[in-house]
Amino acid sequence: MARNANPRVFRKVRHASDPRSLRMARKRFQDVRLMNLFRELQAATGENVAVRIAGREFASLNELVSWLAWRRNISERTLWRWDERFSERGFPGLLDAKRSDSESSRAFAGRDEAVALIMSRWFDGRTPSEIHAELKRRWRGLYRDGSKCPSYYAILALLRLKADAAAQGATSKVRP
Image 1 (cartoon, rainbow, N blue to C red):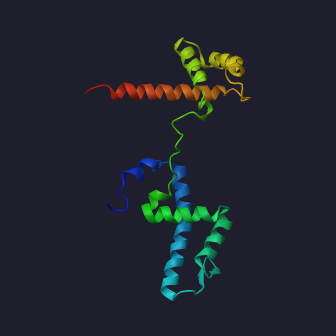
Image 2 (image 1 turned 90 degrees about the horizontal axis):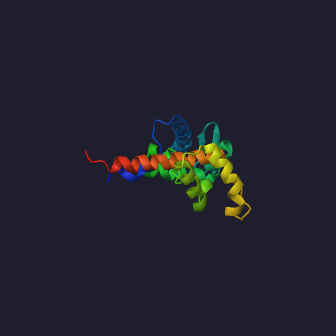
């Protein structure tokens, strides 16, 4: 299988047209490129020879990684992860991965009674504002763990997720 032929790789990354993700990937590539340049220069000049990159001398790759991490205010481990992802998947490996919880609402994780209340009121024709007001009144009775009632916007997000899921389910069952 070719280096970038793994279909799972492309399912996990954001779309390459996302400007923020592309900007971040380019910055990551600059650091990984410096790490690879160091490797090439050390290989060409011989082991344990100091290499000058960006106006500084580095005796080891670890020194360079420490300096890059300090300059970018990130951990060294993060740089090593980027280097590994780049060597495995190329530039697409440096794009931000899609969050595993992006298709769910964390505000309602483990709160099935609240989700049921919201959905039943929604199907009864109540507005999100009315649903939020009722949920705020009933929250302490439903959950005695001292947690706060999710916001109005969390309710809107949940309704959007449920509507999207219902729309996808409806389109997947339609035959051509």
